[in-house]
Length: 198
Image (cartoon, rainbow, N blue to C red; front, side, top):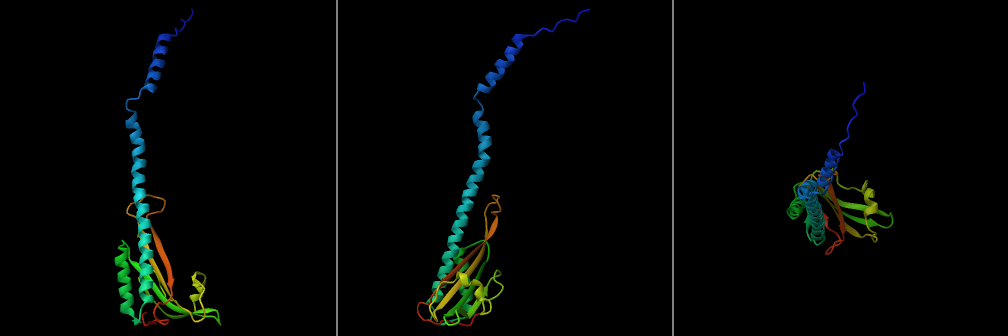
């Protein structure tokens, strides 16, 4: 007995293909799908732009406050004591207005052209970042960062450190990082500034 032949229904196939073509040509609902795809990227871009702008703003405030402290000390006629440095740190924290504490290290040194060495007159620290004051034994560690100085030329070095904490976690290890500044200037009034701070 012969098996019945399968009948191929072209009409049904044509209807299916027509439906698929119409489905891909339809444009209603397209904006909804695009919105769902682009909104997360757009939202992240807004947060990332604000975070990057805020980090540059914080960096600018940090460097300006470091220059302000260096400039104030460079015009000092009296003695730089512990109370003086405490006030400088408070001034920096007020200027920076950050979400993290500010660390400060101020050093006063002169250059001896005969020995080609920098001699530290005094150095003091505030905050938790800097663990030790500069001394003659280790000041050579920052020799490459210091400018060329004349014989017996004196200089004030202000180092600041502040941890930036991003307002939004945008990924890429950008949630927090250290912002350090290294500023130096020469005394403007007296060549020798006396310091008793620790």
